[in-house]
Image 1 (tube, rainbow, N blue to C red):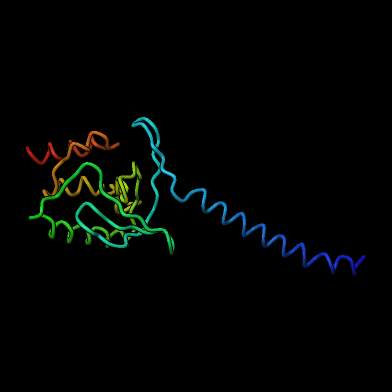
Image 2 (cartoon, rainbow, N blue to C red):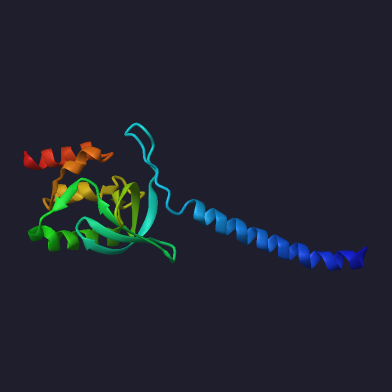
Length: 164
């Protein structure tokens, strides 16, 4: 009995390792590019990502893990060329305060970019909605896309309070 067990045990261990590796590989592919599209009354999923670079005031490159990078754009706002450098500096400061981590809600894919809502200073109240910060500091204006953003009302209120 012992000799049979000693012959079968290495095969069972190898089978277990292969099964675990296959499950891990399958599971990682299941969540790779899923986007939860939701109506405003439904719950949206916020994912934590690292900021790799601030490419423009409304465009970022983010990463999760070693190989998963995405180009994103902030929903509903645009920054003029004249405000671009100062806005990028302000965003870099905000992201540094947030230890390089941002919360991202993926809304839709537009070519190679994802349209998103982005939040900094996660876990601190209030969290900083990047689009709203750009508006309240006078760097950004609203675009027509704001009506399709889940928190578009917050962006519109920020614009309204700035114009008072």
